Every structure is written in C-alpha cells, then in structure tokens.
Image (cartoon, rainbow, N blue to C red; front, side, top):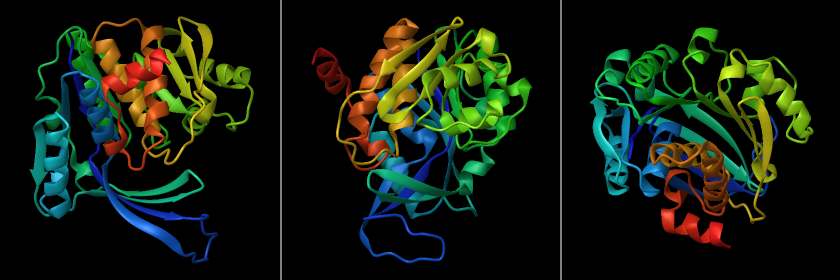
Length: 304
C-alpha cells in the first residue's frame, strides 16, 4: 500500500452558529461557539488516516495553546506528525467560521501556515505508489517544490486549489488530479459559474483549464455530487440525500478519501464513488477534522 503525504495548513476553527448570516455592517445574535481542529491540510490528512491510509502531514504550528491542542488531536487520529514543525514568534493558523442554515462563511488567518517552506517539503522520502496532496493555504512555491519531488519519485499529485486564487500554468503542469468547486473552477478557467449551472457548463470550463487534457479533474458540486473528467470522458456521480448540518470539511473529506483509495491501489472511478460517500457522512456532523468518517462508516453507506 502507498502512503498519503499532505503538505498543508493546520488551523484551529472558531465556529459560531446563527439563524442567518449578518449583512454588511449588521450584528446578529449567535447560538453557540465551538473550537474545532481544522485547516485544509490537517482535515485531508485526518480523513486519509481514519480511512486506513498511512498519513503524514507536513506543516507548521505556532508555539501557543492552539498549537498544543492541535498536535494532541492530530496524533490521536493516527496522523504522522514527524514533519510538523513548532514555530516560535507566530501564532497557529486560525479560521473564524459562521454557520447559518447549513452554509458557512470563513475568514482564515494563516499564521504559521504562511511559513511552510520548500525546505519543509524536502524532508519526506516519497516513492512510487504514494500520493502527494496540497492546497492553497500554504505558499504556492512550496507546493511546486513538493510536487516536483513527488513527480520525480513517481508519486501521484493531487491539488485542491482552495481557497480560490490565481496560480501559474507551471504549477498546474505538476498536477495529476485536481479537485475543486465551482468557485475555484470559475477563477482558474476564467468563466462565470454558479452551483445551479448545468453539468455541461462545468465540463466546458474544466476543459479550458491549462493542461486539462492530461489530468483528472473533479468538480465538487455539494449535494448535487461530483463531476469528473477522466481521460477526456465526463461522468456525474450523484450526491447522496442526507441532512447537512455543517459543510465546512466536506471538500477536504473528499480529497483525503480519494487520496487514501488511490494509495491503496483502487481505480480512479471506484475511488471517486468512495470519496463521494465519505463526504456525505462528513456533512452530517459539526466541525471539520472531527467530522471525518471511519472506513467502517463509509463501508456501511456503500452497502446501503
């Protein structure tokens, strides 16, 4: 079995819940406040680990209370933290999240995540069959260095270009599999997209991505499911009918689950079905990293 290496962010999520999101300049009464481990890198590493893949996280924490709590939590989930550095004189990454009617808004303050460097990602010994995962909550030059090493070792590279921001064609050329939502796809393809658009519109945009012809592109569409472009052929994996409570970590769950399946040697289409089922469990729970399902839970959903 291959291993999953995730180079990415580690955050403490400060989550508030309310009946609705405030308008600009408005204050609304909240219902509750929670502190959940999060950060896209940590979420994806936890998802892969809980689904049975050897999972190593590469990143940085501040030497503060949040950093200590996150390290304890991630270790308890089975994530290898040998390549997570404690960094002095800077705070741990923090995300402030508001949830109302199952939708969320997020403000991320990078903190130590902004210091993850090319030197940090030079440490893991990658090999053929491994899967290298990253996202846009650490510096892009660091991601490029990580993916170059992964490619040289024969590992599969997965990019989750979130949060949405521009990137160079040179970075995209290092990507084997891209997993993104309609906002991120719209930015990279320079197209105006909405989550209610027909699948053909997303396919058209995905084909416009740089080097799209030689990579797998997965567009996550929330409750509508996942649109995949594999070898130039498109397919829609329908979403599962569940009652969503918190969608914060759903995309990260999908990424980590897909990586775990590919590391286990599963074909891409089987891995997509599995990741779709895993994400449907995640959205039924509060929090990002704590909501990631186990392999037994996903197996039960697939049987049903």
